[in-house]
Every structure is written in C-alpha cells, then in structure tokens.
Length: 137
Image (tube, rainbow, N blue to C red; front, side, top):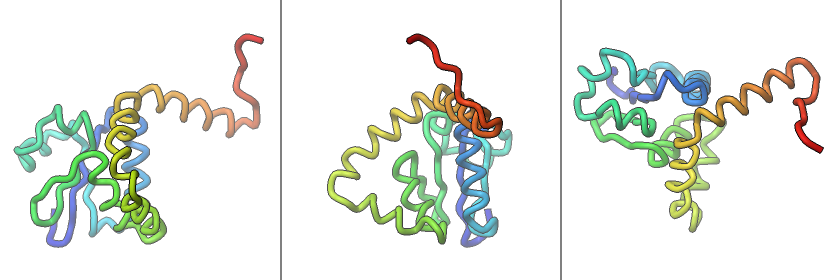
C-alpha cells in the first residue's frame, strides 16, 4: 500500500468475489486501491489484525489510516472511489438501507458460491444465444 491507497482484501477462491475484485480493478485507478487476495501469503504478514476467517467471511477494506471496514461497511466507501458509481453510494444513506444492508450482504456472502454458479451459467447461455435448459413442466 502506498500513501493515499487503500487495500481491498477478498476471497480469491470465490468466483463471485474475484469478479467483484475485477470490477473494482476496472473502476478504481490502481494508485487508489490495491487488491489483496485473502489467500496471499503476504496478506497475513501485512495485515496481521485481519484473520483468514474474517477475510473469507467478508471483504475487508483497509483505509489509508489503518481502519478496517468489513462487508457492507466497505461497499459505500468503494463506490465513492468509482467515478461512474458514486451516486449509488448515496443510496446507503436512505433510511432503512443501513438497517437491511448487513442482512443482505451476509445472505450474499453465505450463498456466494451458489450465486457464482448461477452467474456463470447465465453468462454461458448469453454467449451462445441459447436459453438455459428448463427442468419440469
């Protein structure tokens, strides 16, 4: 991490998390955010206060001042760093969103591997122009 840079620690073993990290990589200048896979051996040395269990449970955003935002707390901060997505960060200030966002984030995090399969399947069928196979009547 350099001065003025934040670090995003994510689960590189999760396809959905990796896609999200790629989205961050494309949306935020590299001098602003460093992407650090949870499984990277350097992660534990550089960020000893963040356990492997923590970074496998939720993304961890290490701010310039050393504070750590986890999961849904990190998302608005990340969005504010993305020129095209800053307006979405404002949604987190809408009454009720702050109440529901932790539950939504935890549900997505708990089901991220299943969601990864669904997203991959939809991308494959979109690329071939065919409809997904339907089961039952």
